[in-house]
Length: 164
Image (cartoon, rainbow, N blue to C red; front, side, top):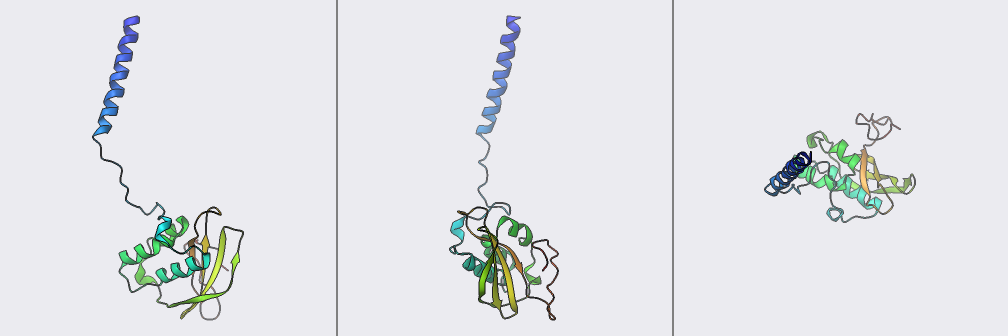
């Protein structure tokens, strides 16, 4: 019975040793940013919610860029939720607009969510910015286009925020 225990321990040790050695030659994990990983805060110089909203809308409305350039420009301004909604947007489907200045004071929903209205040559856009904690950076959750002629808000088919 003692020999059985020794044989078992040797087998278990050999298995553990071979597993650890097999990991020695494996490549290091990639440090490449994916769609799911958030951009570094250094990617965005704006810190105030109004500034993040305006810069994010500028990036969103940069419809003259190629798809990859547009995506690279907007991703740093998007929250995790925003990336899930906008990262696969086809830039050719976005209406062109020139971004102006914020209109009025932002509406707030506590310390983690703000709704900022920004004037454009196509009307007033509402940009929702959020953060996950008070010490985290502000990022764009959603862009809401101006109301359709006649005053009705377009439906949100992406579930990014409730209809008004």
